[in-house]
Image (cartoon, rainbow over all chains, first blue to last red; front, side, top):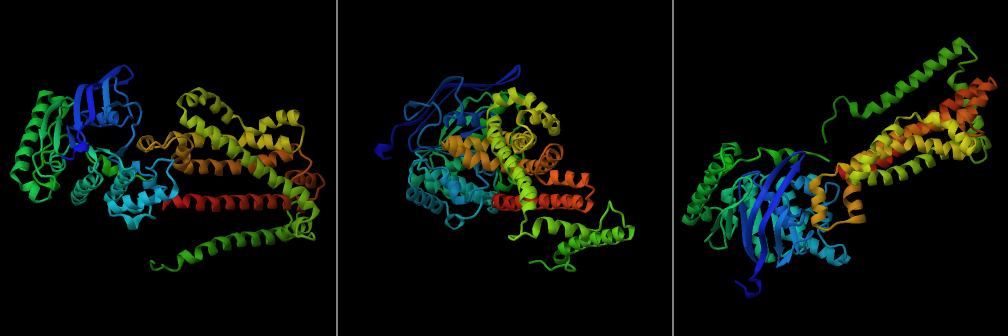
Amino acid sequence: MRGDLVGSMVEVDDVAVAFRDGRSTTTVLDGLSLHVERDEVVCLLGPSGCGKSTLLRCLAGLRAPDRGEVRLRGEPVRGVPDGLGVVFQDYGRSLLPWSTVARNVEFGLAADLDRSTRRARTEEALEAVGLADAAGRRPGQLSGGMQQRVAIARALARRPDLLLMDEPFASVDALTRADLEDLLVRVRREYAMTVVLVTHDIDESIYLADRVVVLSPRPAAVVADLAVGLPRERDQIATRESEVFVHLRAQAAELLRSGLSRSGAHHGHPGVGERGERGPVVGVGDDPGDGVQREHLER
Amino acid sequence: MEPRVGGGLVTRPLVRWGVFALVVVVWELVARAAGSAFFPPPTAIAQVGWRTWFSGPAVLTEAAWADVVPSVLRVVVGWGLSAVIGIAVGLLLGRSRRAGEYLAPLLAFARALPPPVLIPVFVILFAAGTPMQLAVIVFGTVWPVLLNTADGARGVDPVTMDTAEVYRVTGFRRLRRVILPAAAPRIVAGLRVSLSLALILMVVSELMASTSGLGHQLVVAQRGFDFPAMWAAIVLLGVVGYALNAALLGVERRALGRSTG
C-alpha cells in the first residue's frame, strides 16, 4: 500500500440517529461505530431499512447524528465535507432531466473553477465512464445504466478522495449491474479513492469490497467485519467462482440471517433468491421494484 | 417516419379552420337574411374594423393607437408585473416552509376574492385610468402564478435537493440550475391561466371605468347604437386574446421543449 494513502478516512464514533414522526420515535442507529482506512473499499451490507442509508447521509453531512460523532480525515463532519463524491440509487431523481449529460457532470464541479478547467474535467470524467459520445444528450434519452454512469462521472469530475454510494446498482438489470461493478473497480483504482458503498446484495458487497461490514436490522449495529482476502483485480466469472468468494458469501449470508432471526420475525424474512437473475444469491428483504418504478417517472 | 393514414395529420388543421370559415359564412348568410340592426353580417363588421383601426398611413390608424395599443399594453404590462411578483414571492413561499405555512390562509382568501370587486376600490385609490387598470390586472392575475410557483418550488425532488447540497450548489446557482427548471412546468401553467385572466380583467376594467382602450370603445359604440363598431371591438378583442395566447404557447414550446426531450 502506498505510504501517503495510509491513515484513517472515516471514523464513525458511537453514532445514534432517531426519527420523530408525531409522537412515535424510530431509532435507526443506536451507538454504531465504524472505521474506514484511506484507499479502502468498504461495503456496508445490511437488510433494507436497517439504517445504512441514514448512516451514509451522516457521512455525507446531510444529517447530523443525534449522538456521537462522524470524522472525515480526522475532522468532525459539520455540513457537507470537502472532497466528497456521492452516488444515489435513484439516478432518475438525482440527475437533472432538463440539463444535458455534460451539464449534469459539470454540476458536480466547484462553482469557482474556470470555464476551461470545468470543460476538461467534465470530458475526462465522461471519458472515464465511457460516455464521451453522450455529452450532448439528456438523461431521459439514456438507459438506466448509462444514467448511473453519468451520476458516477459527476462524482468523479470532482476528483473526490472519498466516494459514497447508496445502493448505486440496485435499479439496473443484472448485466448492466456487472458492467457498472467493473467500472467502479476500475475508476476507483484510476482515481485512487476511498469508497464506502451501501448495499443489501451479498455477492456485490464481496465482489467490490476490501472489507464487508455486516449490519443488523434496525437499529443497525455492526454484526461482523469481514476482510475480503481477494486480489484487487476482480473478474465477474473467476472471482465469483473462487473458493474465497464462495466461502465469504456463505459466511455473510449466515451472519445476515442470524442478525435477522435475532431481531425477531417482525423485521421481515430473508427473501431467498429475490434477485433470481443473478443465480444463487441470498438476498435480504428488498424494497420491491422501488427504483424500477421511479425509472419511468418523468419530470 | 410513420406512414400517414389517410393523410389525417396533414389535413387536420385545414379541416379545423375550414369549420371556422364555414361558421362565419353561415353567420354571414343568416345575418344578411335576417337584416337585424343588432346583428350585422361579418363582412360589415370586418369593414368597420378595418376602416377604424387598420387603414392608417402606417397600417394603424389614430383610433387604433387610442383603443388597441393601450389595451394590449395594459394586458402585457399587468401580466408581466404579475409574473415577476408571482414567481419571486412564489419561490420564497415554496422554499421556506415557515413562510408558506404562515401565509397559506391569507393567500387562499386573497385568491378567492373575485378580482372585479376591487375595481371600485382601485378607482378611488388611483382614479380611472391606466394605473387603476394595472392594479386590477395585477391583483387578479398574480395568484395563479404565485401559487403554482410555490407548489412547483416546494415539489422539487428531495434526492435532487440532496444532490445539490452534496455538490455544494447553493444560493442563486441552485435556484437557476435546480429549483427554477423543476418548477418551470408549474410556473408556465400559472402564467397561462394568468394571461386569460388578464385579458378578462382588462376588458372588465375598461368597460367599467376608462377613457381609452377596446373595452371603452365597445361601450361608446353600444351607447351610440353603432352596432357594427361594437361587434368590431368584440371581434378585435377575440383576435388580441388569440394572438397573445398563441405567442405564449410559442414561447412555452421553445422554453419547455428543451426540458422534455
